[in-house]
Length: 435
Image 1 (cartoon, rainbow, N blue to C red):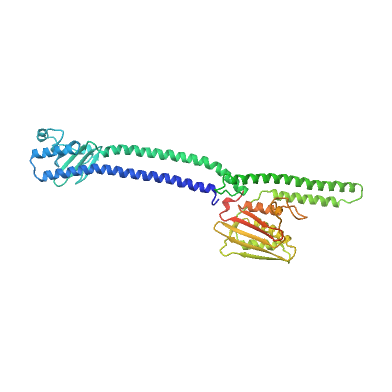
Image 2 (image 1 turned 30 degrees about the horizontal axis):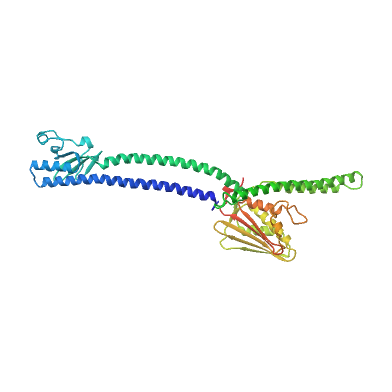
C-alpha cells in the first residue's frame, strides 16, 4: 500500500533503528578516540622522559650527576618505578635500588619476560601503566611505571563501556523486535481487512476516519444482506403465488402448464444470477494490453448505431496486470448501461491514462445522467432505476474492481451524462491476487 500509514510506520521504525545504531557507532568511535588520546598522553610522557635521558647520556655527565637527574625525573613525572638499562640488560639506574646496589649488582633485567618481547628502535610498549622504550641513539632501554596512568584506568573503563554498549544494543534490539512485532501484528490484520474492504489507510486518518469508513462498509454490507433477503423473499413470493394460481387453473382445465414452466424458468434464471453474483471472484492476473481489452468490450457490447464510441489512450500507458475476462465483463456492463442511458444519438468516451502508481480508465457518456439520491445507491446490489433489471450490473463491476485492488468512482447529474472512473494499482501482480 503505497503512501499508507503502516508503510510509513515501517519506514519510520527502520530509520529509528538505524539512527540508534548510528549513534551507538558514533559514540563508540568517539570513546575510542578519547581512549587513544589518553594513551597518547602517557606515551608522550614516556617519550619526553626518553628524550631527557638521551640528552643526559649525550652530555657525558658523571655517574652521580646522572643519578641525581634521574631521581629528579622520577619525582617530576610521578613515576612509581623508573629503570634505565643498556642493551645487555645491565642497570644504569633503578629508582627502587640504592645507587651502590644497582652499580655493584651483576644481575641483568629481562624485560621480555614481562612484555613478551622487546621493543624495536623508538618503539613504546605498554601494559597496565607500565611502559618500555628503546632508544637507538644513544642505545638504552627505558622502563617506567606511571603512578597516575590514564591509559590503564581508561582501558579498564573502556572495557566495561564496550560491554555496556553491547549488552544495551542487544537488549534494545530484542525490545525493539518485540515492540514492533506486537505493534504490527494487529496493524497488519487491520490493514488486510481494510484492503479487502477497499478502505485507503492514510496516515492522517488511520485512527479515526479509516475505522469509521470500515464501520460504514460493514454496516452497508449488513444492509445489503437485509435487502438481498428481502429481494429474494419478494421475488420468490411473487413467483410462487403466480405458480399456485396457474396450477389451480390447470387443475380446473382452464389453462395449460406452459405458463408454469415459464415462471419456473424465470425463477431459475434469478437463482443463477444471484449465485453468480454471490460467488467469490477468482482473479487470474496476466499482462493485459489495454487497447485490446477495450476493443473487445466494445465489440461484445453490440452498441446500437445511434451511439458512437471514442477511445483515447494517452502516450506512455503501458500494459496492466489483471484478469482479462473479468475486466471485459466489467467494461461490457458499464457500456451497456451507458448505451441504455442514451435515448437519442450520443457518444461514449473512453480515456486511458496512467501515473507512477495507477492505471486510470474513464468512461463518460452523454446520456440522461443519474439524480443525486440514486447516485449514492447506484453501486448497491438490487438497486436499479430501470423497469426491467435486477440491479446487479454495477454492483458486479464494483466487485471485480475491488478484487483487483482498484477503486471505482461515479460522477453524474440529471441531464448531464455519467462519468465512471476505474483506478487500478500498477504494482498488483500475481502475488497479490485473491485465492
